[in-house]
Every structure is written in structure tokens, then in C-alpha cells.
Amino acid sequence: MKLCRSICILAVVLALAATSYAQAANATALRVQEQKLASKLMAREMPYRVLLPDGYDAAKSERYPVIYLLHGLYGHYTNWTDKTKIAEYAAEYRFIIVTPEGADGWYVDSPLASHENYESYIVKELIPEIDAKFRTKADPEHRVIAGLSMGGYGALKFGLKYPETFSLVGSFSGAFGTSEFTEKTAGEIGKKVDSVYGPVGSETRRANDVYLLVGAVKDVKALPFVYLSIGTEDFLFDSNRSLDALLIKQKVPHEYREHPGGHEWGFWDDQVREFLAVSERHLAAQKK
Image (tube, rainbow, N blue to C red; front, side, top):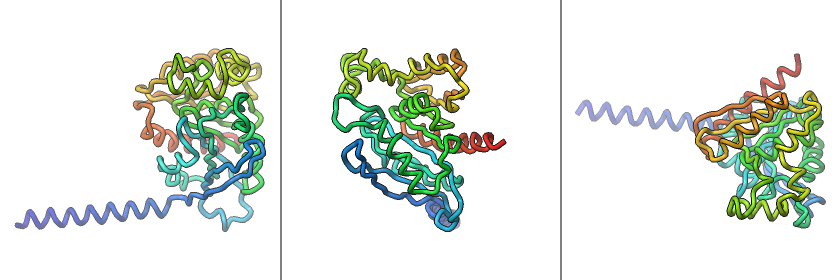
């Protein structure tokens, strides 16, 4: 009887502890804000989410670095805040975090679809909007971009094509072989790529091929620092290793990590938490 009573008491204590922990976690999580931008380049309203640092409203004179997080194929701008604990992790830092909508557009300007200009939208409209609307440190030294899968590819591509805009780029499970994907070679994913880039050998494919962009680098000092991570069970493992080898060959400053995991949210949740710490160290190092 005493044993049963002890077990019941222990169960109640554990339940209360779990509830308290959950309430504490929710209390420290940043508020997710829904925003929209009336885009001329996209000819429609483009949604995005913003996480503002704790105390943002009270600290009227303080300005903050910005991290843009790009979602993957078949995803949306809501993914990072809905499927990871980014709102909790970010509460420890002093970043503004923005999650743009990229649909299945591979973060390029498509020559095949009217007003599907995701690359220009982010660079020419969204970034200026964020710098005007929020108290950002509006310089490349305090601007970071990262993403998962399609978004990892997009983040690296932005860093290579617009090195004057970012100081750090991050890719988690980056889909780097995109320019070679076709419906015949990659099924449904390849079909999506065909509809955005056009046929193999097209100018759009060449201009957005990260291997070609890395290979053409002339001044590595002008590039943002690159962070790459990939799960050892990810089907994109080989292409990420190949890109790491090319970055080494071109002497591009970067950090490459391999961790257990597949192409899955558990891996990306862990990586976005780690990337916040990487970003903090990177920005701190620039001040020295």
C-alpha cells in the first residue's frame, strides 16, 4: 500500500514538474508575428513571420542583427516556427529572425512563370522592408541567411551571388545538385525544378548552379563565411561532401559538419539551435 502511495505521489510530482517546465518554456519563447509585404515583383502580398528579441518594444534605441531562415521544398514560411523550437532557442539571443515564403520556387527568378521572382523579391524587396520596418543593424556584417534543403541551397546561392549583402550563410541538408535535376532523373522533385528553371543547359540553371558559382570565385575574402551541415543518413550526403571538397579546393572559408540524422525535422531543429550559437560567435568575432 505504501509503495502504491509513493508511486502515486511520484507520478503527481513528475506531472507537476513537466507542466511547470512546459509553462516556463512557453514563457521564454518569443512571440511570432505575422507580416505581409505588398510585392510588385511577385504581384501579390507575400507573407512572412518575424521573431523580435525580448524587450524589443522597450529598448527604443537598440538595433539588432537579422537572420533570414529559408524553408524547404513543399514547405512554407510557417515551417520554422511551427516545426522547430526556434522561438524558444532565439529567446537567448538578440537577433531579429525573419522567415520568408519561398513556395516551391527554389529562390530563383523563374523565366517560365510570370511574377515568380523569389530571388529578386528577397534581395530587392524583403530585406529593404525589414530594414525600414524594424530596428535592424542594416549592414552586411549584421545580416545572416540560412535554410534547410531547398532553403539551404537558396541561402548558399544568395551568399555567392550577393556577397556584399551577408556576412554569414548557413545550409542544413542543402539540395545543391538542383541544376541537374529533371523529371527523368529526380521524379517529382525534378519536375518541380523543370517548371522553375527550364531545360537542362538553360541560362537560369547555369546562373544558379552553386558548384559553378563556387568554381568561379575570384576573391574569397569578399565572400560571407559558410556553414554547412548534413546528416550521415541523408540522401543528399554525397552532394554535400562534394561541395565541401570544392570549397576546400577554392579556399573558401567555411565550416563543414556531419552529424547522425536524415532529411528530417529532428535534424533541422538541432541545427537551427546550433546555428544561432554559430551566428552569435561569428558576430562577436567581427567586433574584435
